[in-house]
Length: 118
Image 1 (cartoon, rainbow, N blue to C red):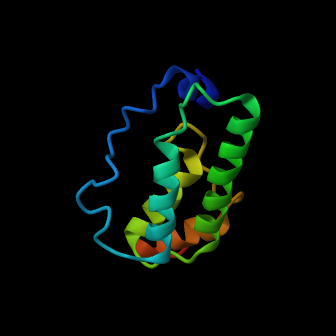
Image 2 (cartoon, rainbow, N blue to C red):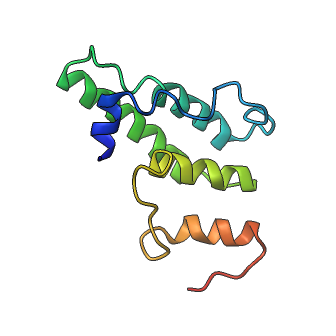
Image 3 (cartoon, rainbow, N blue to C red):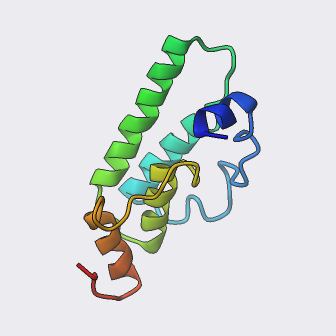
């Protein structure tokens, strides 16, 4: 089942992370602020009442926020995790590897105190 089919089936509505999850607001960084906006859209992504055009616009809004998240520097390990969650749609899409997204992996490595492999 691909991401679009999962959205249509409503499989993502039962996401394990409620918006008010403990710790979600614990560190107010620019990435966490953008992630909350992304997540608020994400939980409404399976609205079957939207037309194809409305779904395309909805997906564009999600992608715009994902791009902003990707462009911001990660200040905490939670920021790195938020980037990975948004970039993959909770794992429904593939996580880019180190060649595709070197900045993300450099941030991840910095937060685990390891030098990047590249």
